Amino acid sequence: MADDKLRQELYYIAKLTTKYDFKDMSVVEEILRQENERKLLTSVFGTRFKTRIFDIASDVKHEDNCVICGKPAENGVACAACLKSILESKYAKNKNEIEQTGRFNLKKLFDNKLFRRVKSFFSSLSSKSKNSHEIPEKVDTVESSETIKWYKSIRAKHIFQYSCIVCLTLILFIQIYILGVWLSLPTYNKKEPVRKSQYEATAVADENQALKELQKEFPEESGYTITYSRQDREYVGRFLIDIGDCCEEVEEELSPEERYEYFFQEDVYVFYITNISDYSAVIGKAEVNANGSIILTGSFNDGRKTDCLYRFR
Image (cartoon, rainbow, N blue to C red; front, side, top):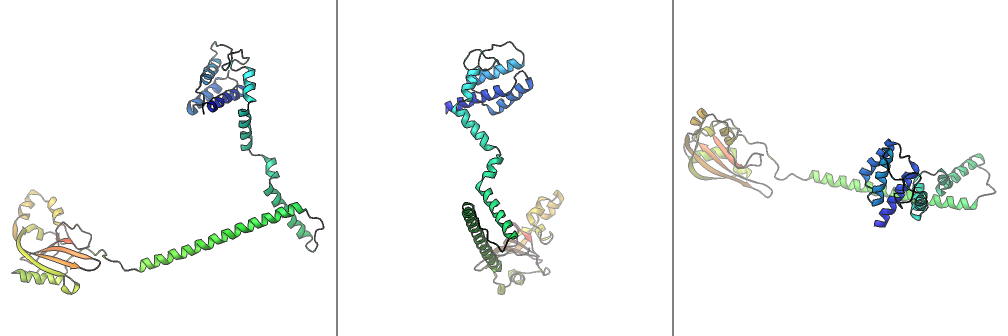
């Protein structure tokens, strides 16, 4: 690996030496700029080369010996013997072949078999159009056989392309069918709209009347089960906020004066509400005050927080 790196550096030095005039400072600056980016000249020879060409461009006094072998050099950088040895080496010849191969070669293009086949194909078409009723007496058998092979390869490619198109079309139809089946399936546990009572608040005297008010909202026919839990105490202000608002969010924005009246307490009736089916479940808690107002908390599948209280009625 080190030998290849050294060969590359020496070849690079020889190419630059034979191609450029190092007395031109702009040329030297460009070489040194690219060297700083690519880091090609890192050996002792490369370091000597960079120093020498900079000295030449700057008109600084320097030795005229070769940076490679140390012998006198007419150009002040590398002697003719070193340049000849490097540029005629096997490594340099391989590099030149690679560079030549990478360039566009018009002659090779016209010598290409594919070009000759296309040319033969169009020649045969033109001859047939001129004398469609005549059969040519002389046919180039070599070109004809090559053209037939080319026709067969083209035909095989077309067959493969058509097969791919048919397969992809079938896959597309299958995907569309699966999408249609998926869209036709019923949506389980779907999101319900935000719950708000459709009834006016009616005063209640005990838990039985409170239960009847809740049964209007969550009827047993719809699968709801309402269970009385206890009589408890709750903040008065939670039954006075707008219907649909979250109690906790409202409480965060209360002023000191509003807090004084909001956090008075009153008696409420507490109930648990459940509705469990094969594909969905509703589990929540309802509180009813003496005026018949209701606040809810729990999972009602309506997109609201399950751990917050909301004014329902």
